[in-house]
Amino acid sequence: MTNDVLILGSGIAALQLASLLNKHLNVRIITKEKLRTANSYLAQGGIAAAIGEHDHPVKHIADTLEAGSYHNNRETVEKIIKAAPDLIKFISEQGAVFDKNHDGELLLGMEGAHSEKRIVHGGGDATGKNVVEFLLSTLKDNVTIEENIFAYQLLLNSEKRCIGVKAKAADGTIKKYYSRNTIIATGGCGQLFTYTSNALTVSGDGIAMAYLAGAEVADMEFIQFHPTLLYVNGKTKGLISEAVRGEGAILVTEDGIPIMEGVHPLKDLGPRHVVSQKIYEYLKNGHKVFLDISNIENFTKRFPSITTICEENGIQLSEGRIPVAPGSHFLMGGIKTDLFGRTSINGLFAIGEAACTGLHGANRLASNSLLEGLYMGKKLSTYLNQSTTDVVFKTEPTSGYPLLDKVVLPTVQQIKDSMMERVGIVRNEVNLKKQKAWLDTFKSCQLNDLGIYSAEEITTIFMLIISRLITEAALERTESRGGHYRSDYPMEDNQQWLRKTITHKNSWGMETNHEHIETALAT
Image (cartoon, rainbow, N blue to C red):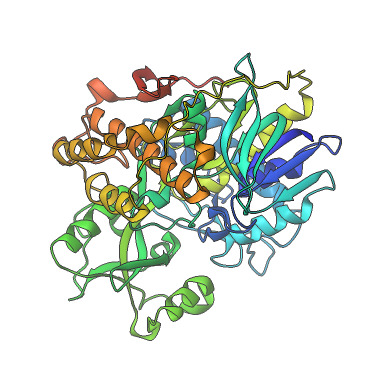
């Protein structure tokens, strides 16, 4: 069956798009696991929009650019930020999605690097869940959802246009899904690192698929590490939202010493990369770091989801301290797109965290991600609702993958641990080269027909591909900017690197061609 629109992924960007597509379009959503295992569903933080009495989009724009270390595409920032109030208003008018005060006005919270209270929440700290459930309730009969379908290869016709995907069902059966328009909304790649806030499914699949098909991928060195993940017995157990610090919690050592004093003017609400680096520094030196929540009134009522996570892991909130560690949280880079989600391959679109629109620059401002998902889903829906492209549904005779024997792959844990240690919060040339050399030993795995591998093995291969792109970009960018911190190049180098993007584009020889280009995304 041919689809008008095939959407890979089930997060907020995917569901916003599906909910706004015209009823005459045949829409199919396929998702790697269950519908509600996307990062969006786990999102505790809110959605940023300049709707407060003393706020203005100009302030929100300035905060976004500063957090992004001015690597952002300014036109993209302005368009998305200015659209934010109307996007919130539209959803708010549909039902009880967001929290309001006694007067029926939206409650606005504060988060790191914001200059005003502008964060809209739903269910206290269950914003993602609330918005996802709302969007699911608005889906029309023309939308079909298939769970436990793992898309692993884009299908291209002789004109190099994307016409669908190859996928594996839970029983290993290979299926082909043809579509006039294929949308990657599979999220980022948080699971590449030992410590992460991301859902178990988020390992860079969609970006790897697009890269292998020849799409341009940009800004892969910029990975945001969230400062505060619950840290118990050497493992991270879930996200402790930035909103907790927005309500007054402070980061302290086991001796109660505040760690952000004198580090940044905003102290505990400084940019995420600054706070993450400081916590990481203390942990590496043998200290423990805690969020002191003792001065937050009605914590359990204000943060019910966080309370549950803590209680399930044996944390006594009555003691007023939550042990934390930083972990990978968000990818600023991804498949390069314009503001309609169009990639460098005709018929292929990317939205949400899998895409790189230029909004986030080198470091995403808190609560701008769900906003981007809502904006891009709506924008792409307007494009597809008007699209009448004729498509030739005939694949090329060769897939571009020579048939070779299976190769030995590393374990997923080996990838995660090596990436965390060598390409994590603090990077340097020695470790990056060491990681690149290790990854290069698995280079041949990129040449195989992926169909001969299991879904788990394909996931591992995709993790290797994304790890390589991140490592190469991190090695090439000889400065520190936003989520990319090089201890051997600790300062920003505006003369050489300001608004310069490292773009990767794959050729069928499976070699990486990368170049410096000005970030100029068409709108």
